[in-house]
Image 1 (cartoon, rainbow, N blue to C red):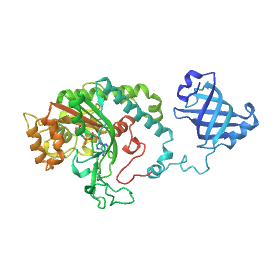
Image 2 (image 1 turned 135 degrees about the horizontal axis):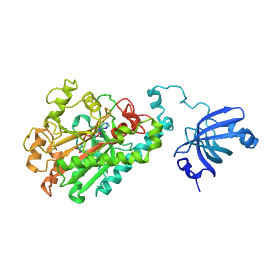
Image 3 (image 1 turned 120 degrees about the vertical axis):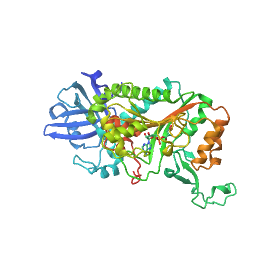
Image 4 (image 1 turned 90 degrees about the horizontal axis):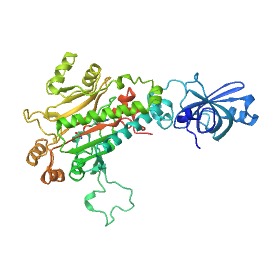
Length: 450
Ligand code: AMO
């Protein structure tokens, strides 16, 4: 049976074999300590000179950090070890001896250096823990949505028009490395010899999910989205993963309840599944464990009042900035719904409040511990004439959105949805300083390597 470090508890007293990597080696003459990882966890193997053959001891001396090894030995519980278990090594083989110049050492490196070494930095326990929690969050979201009767509908990444405003659109020219661009089979409108966009990278799959609801009722997507963000912040990436969900016959209040239910389910799952990862991150899970229903709710107008009480100089009609969100969410210890933003800075597709048509049926869900927005969503305008009017007011070329208008011509329903930024959720749950650690290979305005 193959052994994984995460299952060590079930193998105490047995002979086990680990296929993995040395991440730290220490030696005190006749004893060599090898800290190992196998992808599932971390453990220490002890190689004692008088308990192994001279060849095995020589191999242990030869091995070095980041070498790939197979270690066999007796597994025992070791309460003094940070890993709780230890292997008394009997046999050791080197699969690949690492070079001596591994770039990341125990000394403090600057974050820019580490990001340049992201392909190697990912191996470190802290990054391992973040990647595992990220995976758990994504998996919990998928499971929750399926339990709730949602079907996954993959929205396109190459799109003809904007979902979230044209200022952050990434254009994609059609400039393939074909040998002969005058080839007759290539349609002339592709503008192969010009840098005119062929398409744009998706900012959100929402509009396509709205098409999916008349087929499947409740749908979601989960994939990469792109925004050409202008500024450098701790919360913005140019490529990030978004889960969009959309449901027919779901109205504003029901939407907020549903978002709350999902966040609670995800937190519960992560707390249950990832105690070792929280320990590795030194992330106190207590603030997450005390999150409960109902989440507080403030209208945009009430939020401005609260922010001013908290010392902000935010003006009427202004959107909340990063600093405002932080200020607010250092005050609230539960996730907070900010509801009904003014139409002036919200997208064309939001339905308006019947009593106050200058306000949208929109909401942002902000995370505590200073984290700010993790979800944006709302009820959509489902009336054809009103939607057309809103598009014109927003200065959109309605021809680009003919297909979207069709959804109001044929089988319109009251409907609502939301988009959750996976990295925002990971940053909060792991309590990260900066969103760049929440994704395996971060892309920002300044960095898109490795
Ligand atoms: P919105 O623009 O609020 O809404 O985005 C939804 C969520 O995506 C995350 N997010 C980001 N994460 C990292 N880097 C960025 N640059 C970035 N921009 C946004 C946030 C945010 O809450 N279609 C609508 C949603 C809807 O109404 O259904 C939308 O895209 O967590």
